[in-house]
Length: 305
Image 1 (cartoon, rainbow, N blue to C red):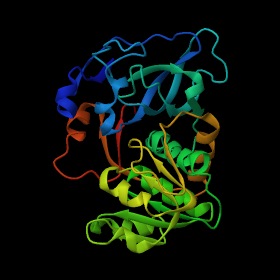
Image 2 (image 1 turned 180 degrees about the horizontal axis):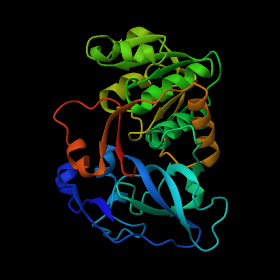
Image 3 (image 1 turned 120 degrees about the vertical axis):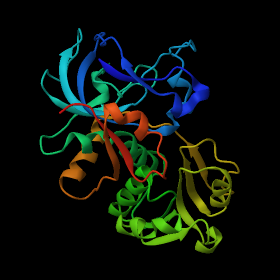
Image 4 (image 1 turned 135 degrees about the vertical axis):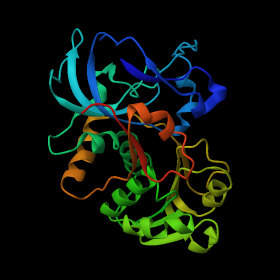
């Protein structure tokens, strides 16, 4: 099968290569999925799981990518809940070969049914962005109607999901980004926009929940904005400093079939819009992940017809 592989951590995205790899076989409780579309997060090149297995041993050459939409083509021994020929989408295991390939083997529990009226490209754009936003807001942030949310990177794949889900839940959302992102952030539903290059974060006052996807100095400034009893949620490392009278939670997104089902239903009925950027075929994936201009939206690789 065709696949994108990486072998050299120091080379980063530039070290990606399109090559032929043996097709995977299904282990117990696995399914084999013929991939039609795949998503990719550039920071995967920095994740230990891209390079080593759960024992810490080198697993290169490895296939990156963890988001996918496709069709089940085979079942492993003992696999239940899915059937051959079924359309699915989901999030592949961090420590196994991923989804920038024609075929992937993964645990059935990491997949959810993809309704027939949802395009594979849309399905592949949802798992990491949608689940990260959902879990950060509702599991870790315990967001309630009437609260205020500071959503960093609100024009990005995760931030735009955070904005939409928070607004649907009845929150007041302040989205941040660069000046050029203003209209996009507002179009995704933010009540206000803060230009991180030119506006002062401290001027927005206190908020109940900060959703941080940036880290660094922005995270430090944001910690001071969390109201008593509020929460700073981060996906980019332990928040330092922590809010004086609130919680600071760092988390790694986890797969969840029920949450994926909730997310895709919101896409179907128009409550949630995807934020898809460039869509490229697998043969052009290496170039797509090494752009000459700033990425906008979620990059998707079309694998099958």
